[in-house]
Length: 392
Image (cartoon, rainbow, N blue to C red):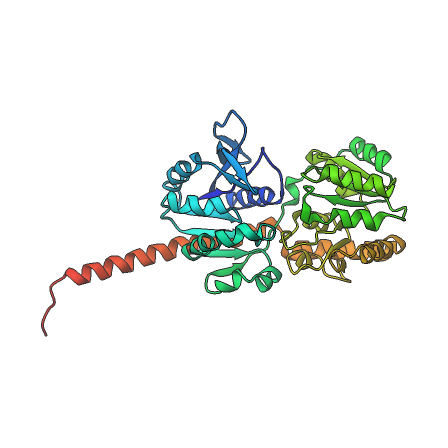
């Protein structure tokens, strides 16, 4: 089984949530006999194909970016060429240019779309994009939602009930480095023994401005890991609020992230818009057995984090409710430990990479079998049409 993944960014250019998901899919299905290739866009000069964790990565030049829509003319030819040599093409939505590339490359292989998120922010451009989006979603063979919560709340997915299924994202703990004692000691000295942790790209929908408001007037240490387009804006807000208990540590490497996930008291994940369709760093918190705080936005965040069980769920954009949730966990260590244990148990039950890989591998085989059956049926019907009819 050979699968081509197509998305606008991938390792090593970017290490966001979608990239981590594709990585986990490729590594996990690779262990089950799937040969994976990833095609992505890049600003780098050296774009020679390379092997990464058992799968091949091909990159083409990024020509332009308009309203977060990455464009590459070269990707159309690359998609057509690479698609010829695989059994399934796996798209990762949303990326409007990808929809166009699919048709321009004349892809004629079984296709699956992992539906990572609705498009939330670019409402005016969305109206122009709607016809292409629905033509694309109608054309693919299968659509995968990442949680029952998102499937139930997406008006777009509601239009495709016959081809949509749910496969939650999964992570493989063995792909995360084990931090050494010196690294743990370094971070413990720098951030203290008890702190709330946020990990992620600093984007508009992450709700970090709400977290900063919640932290104001408290002495709860908050560590924010990541870089992104609103980083300076958030630092200016923290300065205005006079926050001495919030530390921005920027983008860090995987061993340092693992160290902070190991050491943190709880994970605070205040994303307040539906652009946050799942929350990979929230899932990482569950994997590390940490109690979580998240917002109810009708997406996978509250499939990962169950209010009162694995953590606390608050209304979106409500700094006072977020502060109260932080206070509840901070003042009740036994409750926090119990929720952390439940989070780890839920992770093992629903969110391992092995389960995700097995489900996607089964889907790939089903799509190929369906296409083969359809082709055989069509050939039989064509043959029957030209055979002479025998009179009885």
